[in-house]
Length: 321
Image 1 (tube, one colour):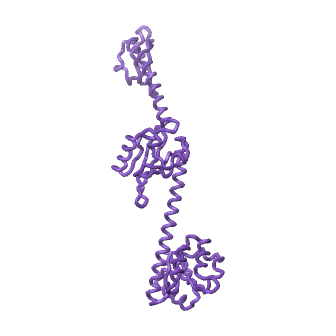
Image 2: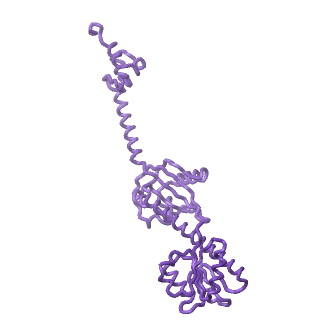
């Protein structure tokens, strides 16, 4: 793994040398040193460090002033403050200004630098974890809000919405203020029975995939949707992520097709005209009751047979020339 690059600032040159020697001996750290904090805040090199260790009592700029300047420019930079013994007020001020850790000077150097190494590692790992979490949340947020499907994030226990995406607001005709903090039941988006059914399926299977149901928009319009859902754990809180693909147009098209087919079937069955349908190969696929009556040939005798064979049977013998 890559070495952790540290800047250690202290006006005691002996401590700088000892810290550098001790921290670099295991190959985990690369330590740069400076005898003063003056001018460091304006250095472009500061941004490249993984952590900063600073003495408190230094001429011209003390450790607290240095910390404040670092926090203004680099809010996420791990910062460990070295203090002299008996400076509790400095410790309080350091913590109030965002120091990750503090360490009091004195005692056995070996034990002291081992503790310093431990605190640096803790601070770097914690900042990395926070950064990774923030980046993960930002990626999730981008995907969540850019999702063309209707999506909502709610507290599993209470059902109250924490966030919804633009597709949710656009398709269900709500504003964000109308939704956040409310439940799907309070907004009449889904019935209590359907929600219980969804939650039960989620708890049983751990997830939900393409569950077909109906939801209601603010204006009362009913949308046919395919719902997918997952339970997400955030600390001790369980969140429910629901995504719904609107298939209303597909359902309406299918219903219209069924109605059209029903009307066609009704016409074919009840018309007094012979209706014969053939496929691309010439095979008979439809032979309605009127065709049976007019030709005297039952449907079961002609299904699948090439039309020219049946036509030849229907031509009077004297016309077969």
